[in-house]
Length: 250
Image (cartoon, rainbow, N blue to C red):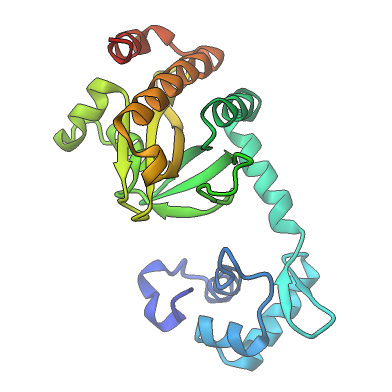
């Protein structure tokens, strides 16, 4: 839920009308298909009259749509911008087939995370067909200081931080119920031609099924192979994975 504007001064852009418009868009959570004017006003801390005026402007721009029952939903423009955002990373054609293969082979949710400040964002994901699985959505954000992918992203962006030395040496990280008590995950970095990390390739599943040592080891081995393939395809050095891959096979 978005914080009322009077509680979010430190996040202000300095342009009040834009901050208010963004607050309305940010009021929609991952499971909110539609919201009433009253609820949007409550979540943003804006007067109903102000909210209604901004909704009209956002609707005109395609960012909000008014539904037949008078409630409001997200419009088509964020989807277009999301597609542009994904393409800006120029990794989709490389990453998506690997995610499909990983999910098919391991039977778990495969995803690719990128860092956004102090958050990690799901840029791509593929879910298995099995009924019990970890379900996440493209575009969802999570704290970067919890979860395997967060550890990987921090390890290769905060390279002087000794907390992540083990992750940097091993080229992988695991998580057992850190963000979600019932979920386990394993993650490895993908690098570009300059050696910079571009994202974290991740497998996650229910902790009871996926969190066993044998499953985590199998996941890490598969992830390292896939990350090497992705890194080479992006112009990077695949050889940096060889020692970690060999260690997994011992």
